[in-house]
Amino acid sequence: MRSGSVFGSSAIVGMVAAAAMAASAGMVFAQDESEDSAATLSPYPTTEYAEGAREATVSDGGITVRVFQERRPKIDPDDDVPVFQVSVDGKLVLEHVGSASGMSMPGMSASIVEIDPTNDSKEVYLSNYTGGAHCCSEIVVAEKTAKGWVAVPVGAFDGDGDYLQDLDNDGVAEIVTVDNKFLYAFDCYACSAAPLVIQTVRDGAVVDLTKEPRFASAHRDWLKQLEEGADPDQRWKSPGFLAGWVAQSIRAGEGEQAFLALQKRWDSKTDEGEEVCLTGPDIDACRKQDLKVLKFPERLKLFLDQNGYTF
Image 1 (tube, rainbow, N blue to C red):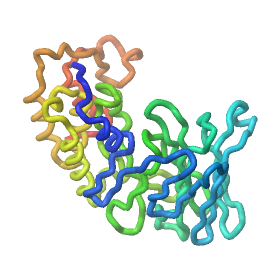
Image 2 (cartoon, rainbow, N blue to C red):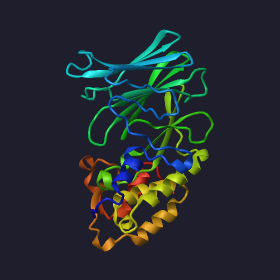
Image 3 (cartoon, helix red, strand yellow):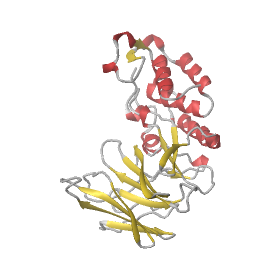
């Protein structure tokens, strides 16, 4: 079953493309980043491009980050690549080169922020827009470890790249996005909702904090935002919305009730079902005996189980 968007267009930008951060949970929506200005509303020291500038710097606590674009033929012979250089007390400690976007102006920014409290230095949060429909901002965190400064790839996410939030107000920022696997999984991008994902970096590695109890209120608030942003006449007809809503209900501790409500309200008579692979997502590589036609609620339950959403 396909339907029009269950959200208004502004809700999609705020909730999905901008990583859907709820103001009522002490979170703020990621703001749009123009070609010549980085995230000026960030609560953290963040690079800002002057009009017409091709590079920018930001400094805090002895850390300085220089961001610029230049042609490096061995990396990309056709486009300028984004370069991030981190210096501490005037000494270069790390250089990270991101993916080219093909944009003439830099779609990149850097923030100096406390992300990993287990070391003796703040971290550098790097964001690089790579271009493409609904995608993507590459996120990398540069941090000091026992072996020196390292660049830790966090991932590529929809939106403008401003995903830093201190969700529990402890002075340590988290990286707050949504689970991109839900976008396009059951419906169009603009018809889809997605559950919150909360990550951080510790000692050179990405750590998933999504299920930690201290973020329960953030999950409840995001669930409320999803529900308030949905058209009540369309929400029970939209598989894209319902998939993300049930998943976020699981994160908020209400998964069983949500799935029972879906089963009760879903119109199974008009749902012809779709073929899925019971053992994994790749239907082309699936054994014939593992192929089965399932209606949407059953397909969703399989998808949730395969991706760690259980209730």
